[in-house]
Image 1: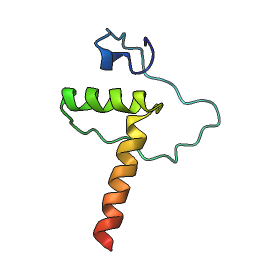
Image 2: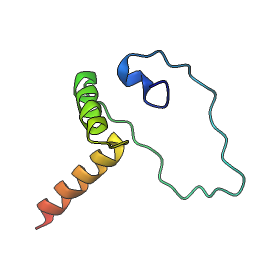
Image 3: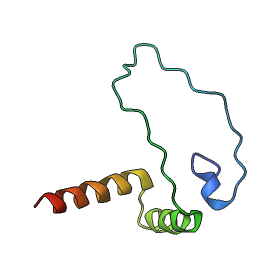
Image 4: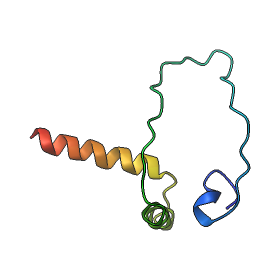
Length: 74
C-alpha cells in the first residue's frame, strides 16, 4: 500500500507541498484538529479496519466520538 496511508505500514512517505483549493471550492469545512494517539494503537486499529474492508480510521473515530456524546446526553 503505497498510497495515502502507507506510513501506517512503515513505508517512507514523501511530503508534498500544500494542496491548493480547487477552483470554486468553498471553505465552509471546519479546520482539522490535531490529536495525539500512540502509533501502536493507531496501527492496530488500522489493521482491523482494513481487515473488515473499511478505508477510514477517521470515520471510525468520528462515529465512536459521536456515539459517546450521544450516550452522555441520555
